[in-house]
Image (cartoon, rainbow, N blue to C red):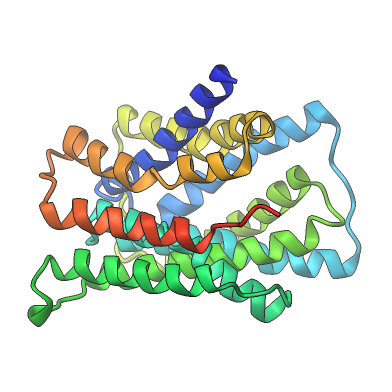
Length: 288
């Protein structure tokens, strides 16, 4: 049990650090090209894993349509908007906004999957929105200024919630590895022409260290960490694992101090507590 918690905490640290990693990478690579390159290395990893496990499967037409939609919205647009947003958005604020994805997922599940929308979800969403407003306004609610990058981060959060809904539906028929592999292949293929259309100019680093950083973060964040989480989550109660995942904004905050020399403000600390509290309230499930 202790070992499982240690691995889960490692995953949370990796995912929380990804906001700072992305902030660093967009200084050396243009966002769409960065998206395409990261997806390329993720696909290589997943192809190798699928071949090892012999889980490459053929899909019917309806499943292909769902995978195609997932690849465009949940992979390409999600990754691309993340890096576009991080060009100007604060990494800690971005992490806090993305932490509210479970709330939006609950609303979408109520609309499209006919799942019951609970009172804690409604109350938690209100609390989380107040927390985000507090962080973005930096305590001065009369002079609210929203950075353009934060709008893209909101789009990232929305596409992530949509990805969860689509995955929840098709995972009843398709195994997770197949869904992840095919959707990432679609996202990668779609990203190639857009790298030339959207990035003006195209920025690409010639430093070996920058390329190594790109490859390692892509493989560890989106590949190894996901596999470790899925392998150890069965040993831990779902509610406790959910609490661990809510620590990502605090990890982003600490990593921002370490790697970006970014000072932590009182507004970020208070806002983080409010937002995480709102998310925990919204995902609260009363034991029967």
